[in-house]
Image (cartoon, rainbow, N blue to C red; front, side, top):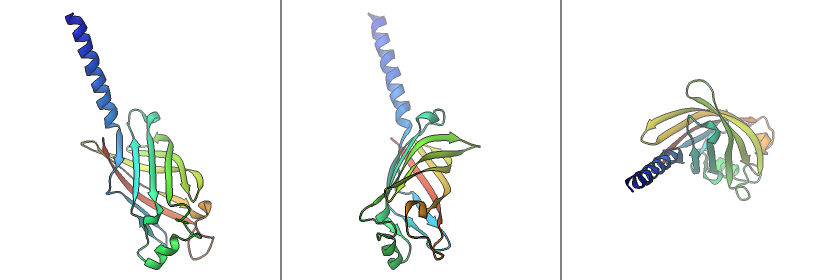
Length: 180
């Protein structure tokens, strides 16, 4: 009888430990994120984003990044430019209020550098992109991914080709996340 209780206790402990380990790998994006786009002109940021990160350095095959950016939260620092960015010619926020990113693969590069490969959707157009990101783990179930990548706005039909606005927009991001 004691052996049976011990085995049940041991199975319960192993199950609880496995649950705890799994829970540490699931993260929710915190409110102190930053996503900025820069070029000679225009530049700006997005103020509202939500997302989830499933990440374990030892098991990249299970890593997942899933983000939804509220394009209506765009801020260019210029009220008229911000309003214009939301029109049908640019982001068309009435029809496409969100940009989305969902990873398909994560690869470790040098040191704390990872390549997050995934599907970026803007204005209903989806393209595969590779996002280089530096990873840091500050303990207490807090992680951060930070990096820079380029997006060709013409690929997503954001505006029209012109000499006034560059085609390539540089996107800087810092995404902190808190473990569940």
